[in-house]
Length: 262
Ligand SMILES: NC(=O)c1ccc[n+]([C@@H]2O[C@H](COP(=O)([O-])OP(=O)(O)OC[C@H]3O[C@@H](n4cnc5c(N)ncnc54)[C@H](O)[C@@H]3O)[C@@H](O)[C@H]2O)c1
Image (cartoon, rainbow, N blue to C red):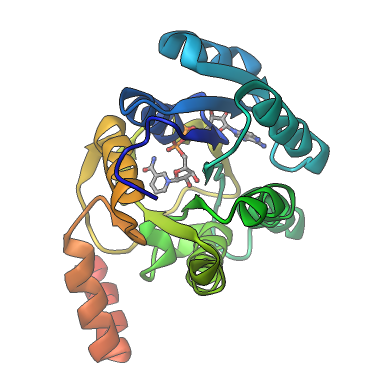
């Protein structure tokens, strides 16, 4: 895809808040038209209202494939094509391993991972037919590095999303479709609303990384789409962590654990 987004149409899930909202703004500022979707219609409508005529809002729960099909049909009817699909919804179940029930695992897998499977089933045929497009999957630094042991379903699904995105990129590249994987560290958003707690509070462990504004992340996503970049980070320190981890995983785990026992 060219660096110009003027004629593109982007569908964003979880677009009513935080990173999704910021990306909607960043893409719209470059001329894209946006289908802002969220389980919370009011939030989606507010963001679409901020963007004006070049945006439309839709209620869509990413656990419901019929909702995503309606979004696809709305986007095609309103704008004629779909170029960018950003799969952005993610939730957390937080607690010690023994306290997080199977049902919580199933919910997080459904929302964080199967939502992307559904999206691919719904949107990919349209992109493949066009022979162009860009998929952005919002994973996390938690999908690249050992992360807090108190949020294993999140960590597991975000790692799965990184793996899914890498292999999907290989399949789609010769077909004219690019994939980016957004792996933010801390971002100031409403994410705390998406956390369900189990058992006694715990102190997570993992690399200490900076927290950035959602607007900065939206700009990075827009730039990565324009330049066909796969990995989108918000904390460059992650590269050093990845190098250290790759060179000696046992040593890395021991170092992280020791840091947090001080
Ligand atoms: N904020 C961070 O520090 C951070 C760090 C790494 C990764 N992420 C990831 O970024 C993504 C976006 O999170 P955010 O921080 O912008 O959070 P946010 O809470 O600000 O926004 C998430 C939006 O998703 C919507 N949503 C929740 N369940 C939904 C569903 N079933 N269907 C459709 N929409 C739904 C919410 O209504 C909300 O508007 C998530 O995948 C999250 O895991 C966030």
